Image 1 (spheres, helix red, strand yellow):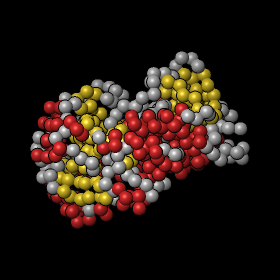
Image 2 (cartoon, rainbow, N blue to C red):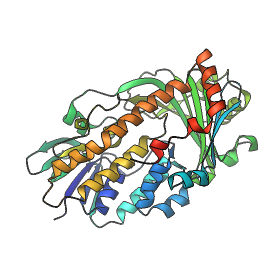
Image 3 (tube, rainbow, N blue to C red):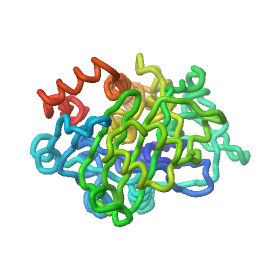
Image 4 (cartoon, helix red, strand yellow):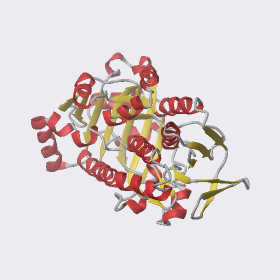
Length: 393
């Protein structure tokens, strides 16, 4: 009989898990606390390791309609504007890793996953339903919802994000930590920008205690811009989408080069995120216990400096489905979830650690920044390419 899979969370990770596991033969019931299935945020970069997974789910055509596929990634010094290094993308990435490098609006990725999920008969989607508690027995796991409803299944997947309630009950390891970095995000039509500021490539500007990343989305018609600086804000961290004052960011980047200041000045509105994460994972028990498993940010929230947060959630979903497809009565569900965790935790921990390290490198000051720039000029693509990541798990 098909396994009954319960999923808490209807973001990118939850939808990816639902799609992958329904394709693997599971019956899926997904519960999202928001009143409707929507995604907020800005852009996402997806390496070939992630695009390959989406292609395997027959989403290539849908992805091509809404994503951009940059031909190069360029790194520049935020103070001088000098080019430091280039990573060839496009066909070079396809030849090396079997899939392109893509950039996409979070909402567009969410929408195509949701559309694919809604076409599957073995999936039931429930919005406006908050999971308040899970209750595990030897033969099943039950959910209690905020409206009093109780449901039961063979496994529960906590894909409920950074502030996961499923994680809190499963691990009780406290809240995420504040990174001390603020992300200013914006997205605007390229046609609204001066010609000199329009771009169809990924550009990363590295400066002291800051960096800025820009790239095309929505088929190249829009530009996504993210500026990350050191700092703190007051207020509730769970309300991660704050309004931002453009003047504040302009002041923080006033000492940067003319082209970067022109880009920042051209953006009329910004949204502000307080970045939080957790230390790199230290064992499989942090991802699965009994009939409950965690996925994506609920399991391994990471800083965005390797551009793999959503990518690791999608990889998680693929591995989860691969394991649950083997549910044949010989291997029980807790064993399969444990295998999922064993196969994923070390890769996720490596990405978490590399993301932290990248942030340190991006924000170097003084002689260390000079050494970083010299290394990029000398080695360029050898430093910017990440074969262990892009080849996949």
